[in-house]
Length: 320
Image 1 (cartoon, rainbow, N blue to C red):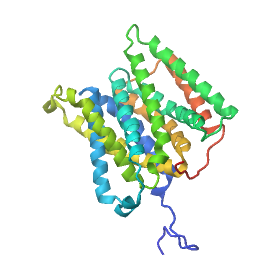
Image 2: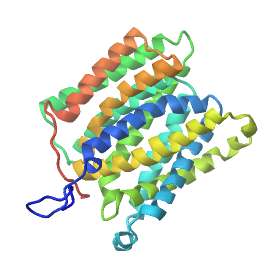
Image 3: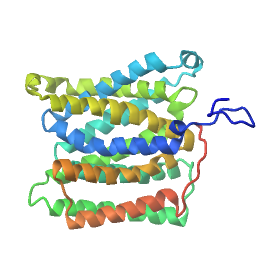
Image 4: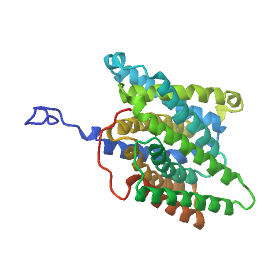
């Protein structure tokens, strides 16, 4: 009998690769490295072109994967949810990355790697409360209040360190808008996945967003001296397209389907750790003392808001 098959029941056990928590951990490592990698790309091309290169390449990689690995029979049986998938593409690919790469052109990637992954779970939790899918307990309300306080302190710290240049503050504001977009994308996840395999759903959403990014980037394409781009830039772009975009988004969608949007967003708290290491080692970026204090308050509040003081258990979600 196959070692992945239960000897008593004869049913197939989930492999380690199919473990949603392992998938989410892999996703967060890939995403954590993406902030500094994306910043490196923006240093050579306009931010709109950088977004297109990453997600246009990711869309192509996902389409190839659908062609080679997709379940065509399941796709034929899937209900029509093109509107939800298009909305997910607009929010999670076009809007999120439009603001994210714009922010990278103004502020350090270290700020993005703290504000986006920490605020996204807070905002996801708030959206779920407003839509009645989650309940508001004292711990969650306290966490949301702390998260808001930490964000304010973080922004004050960003403004204090600009010395008259407001670029970093505006970049951080764009990162916050990106977090709003990602929270909306996470909440839409169960509807996008309903009745369709995660690979195909991720590909459709990414393609929808990539088309809009192409329209946004078109005026800036002529400004790029393509022949002057080094092989390192292209290798970095390929990594962003395949790893943090195609593979990570696929695994994130699978995590949403397995444990729900609130629990799926919880692992976002590991992203700042990976990002801080990458931004410090490869880009030489750093936080001021006040920003660091705000980040600590924000992280504490976000974890409390999402977990409500307890570690969430696994549960299966479906679209409502």
